[in-house]
Image (cartoon, rainbow, N blue to C red):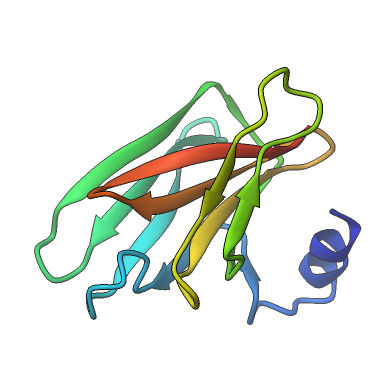
Length: 128
């Protein structure tokens, strides 16, 4: 988690972005973007969506209730995802080599990874 914060504060946005991450997440030679949506009145993040650029389709993946301030997204390339040791069940997911997924990072709290498998996006809690 500390390396993410260091990248964020040194403006190394090749790896992370406060609110936008694009790539071929479905491994179908098609670019889509994850976007954090912010409420203009309150200035807080309200939703995480996936926007398929070729079709214009948008899929809401996560809603922040209540809206929050301290969150960012990070595109990652880990082929093996495991949930947090703090959770009672052990879950492990193997992705295709080179397949990107998206880490949603809650500052000081936890992290969730969204990945594409079997025709839909899934999520796995990877840190607490």
